Each structure stands twice: as C-alpha cells, then as structure tokens.
Length: 179
View (cartoon, rainbow, N blue to C red):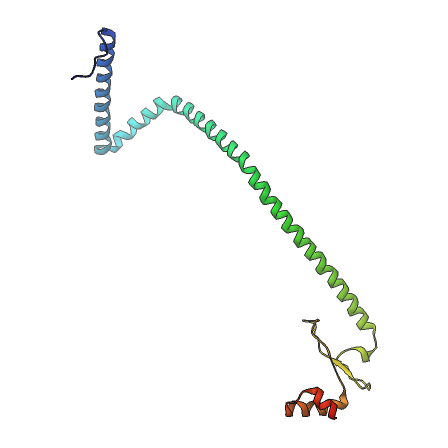
C-alpha cells in the first residue's frame, strides 16, 4: 500500500514537489563541485574562495556563538575544578609546614653542635680527642662526618693487653681481668 499523501491540498503537494526538486539540484551541484575539485584543483580554489566570502558573515556569527558556548562550559568546568585545586594546595601547604619544622629542628641542632664545638675549642688540650698527653687515658673515636659514633677510652698501659687479646681472640674483659 502506498504511503499516505500529504493531503488533497495543492499547496502541500507543491511544497513536497519543490523540496524534491531542491534535493536533486543540491546533489547535482555537489557532484559537479566534487568533479571540479578532483579534475582541476586550481580552478576550484577560486570557487572555494568565492564561497567562503559569500558565507563569511554567517560563519563568523556562528563561530562567535560556539566560542561563547565553549567559554561558558569552560568557565563552569573551572568553577567545579576549584575544589580539587584547593585540596591540592592545602596538601602542599601541609607538606611545606612539615619541611619548615624539620628545617627549624636541623637549624637548632646545628646551633647546638656549633656551641659544643666552640666549647671544645676553648677547652684544654687533654680533653680533645687525638691529642696525646701525660694522662693515663686518651679519648678516641667519633668523627666530624658522624659525630654520634661512640668514643672509646683506652689506657696506654693496657695497649699491650689489647694486642694480646686481639691476637689470642679473647674478649677484652678476660684479658683485663688477668692483666
């Protein structure tokens, strides 16, 4: 069965007929332009320029509308993204505060070490490590690179006992008891 006609009105029938004619004419013009663009691209460039000049007012208006819509969407996205950015900035601030506390602690420790070093420089020679003296013991150990190393106290009279302990592989306490 045939589809229903638009009605018995001549105006509706003429509108349907002319829209069909416009569709066929558009297809024919499109095929002609396609053939010209493939066969003679130099001539088609001038046709393309004329078409762009003719449609420039319409395309510029539509371009402004699309840029405005894109700006609205981008602005809304930036607004919603602000919460994430604020959270990230707060995390960075907290990390910077922790680094500041650590730096202040290191600075305070350095000041204490410098004060200790000044005290050591003003003290007599027999308190400084590595300086030989007539006292019965000398302090050795520790280093500027690692000040927390344990210092050892050795008696010069017991150095021979230490050598015997290291050669005999006995504990020092056993050698000192017998020495």
